[in-house]
Image 1 (cartoon, rainbow, N blue to C red):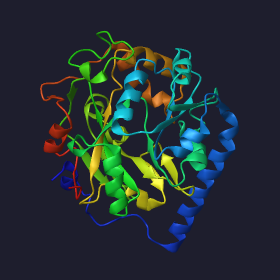
Image 2: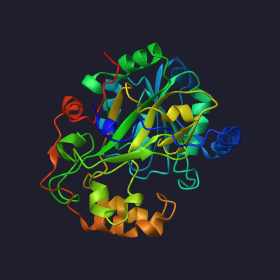
Image 3: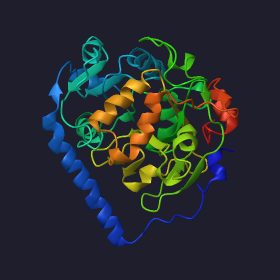
Image 4: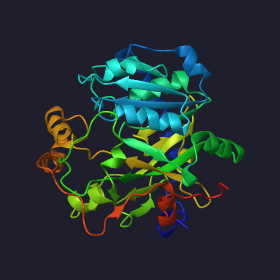
Length: 347
């Protein structure tokens, strides 16, 4: 039993089913692919290894900017999880990120100074690379502050073997915000440190979900950002459901980050019996104040950045997200016991 069973994951689908709706969604997918392919001109090749990309069964895709604090652990985490090669777009970092990535033998790097917001928050850039390199492969799409954990602490090779065996081409995960037991800007953190040594707490309850009326996925909200910043406007709280792992096809496209995808069957990843994972969200390291100040200036992370100014200002001021109901993180088995990870039919 998982928290998703208490939501309406098995409720009747409400998305339109007419031929006209299917036609519209097909053209929406084609438009997303077309705009993504047009943006390939914004990408500059750096240390790209096409042969290694083609030989890799499992690829990880990510768009990043100034993530030197997280990158060493991020790469090590996913190497241990089973990623064979990383396809990364660096969006004009100036903290040594690009030079570090160029020295990694399992990373192919592109760089761009173009607008993150105008590229659908990096999705367009990754889509054109997935179109070129990901067809027929298992493609994991994650941010540098997301660490995927799987039921039983198993790895991606075991998971993809099960998905292949059961005829599935997508896997869902709940994004779980981790936070410290103090102000989010307090403490020290160095490149290469494990974020889980600093961010030890999470909300074990307080999640809500409903079927998305268009894309038919389970739309999940809740967690510390919901209770701290969006209590009076819960509809604006961050979306926590993601489909980060897909056996890619050139006809596929993400719509909003990895929250929704087309064709729509890729969104049905929280159905009863399906295994699910958790993306440990390490956003609230001590650099969050500086990152939020930069975002208030750049205005690249939200469609309507002005609406989120109070949110960023709270992070700059060092908000404390801890509360007496917080749960200390202990590992994947704990998340499975709490129902945040689902084993489903994965023996």
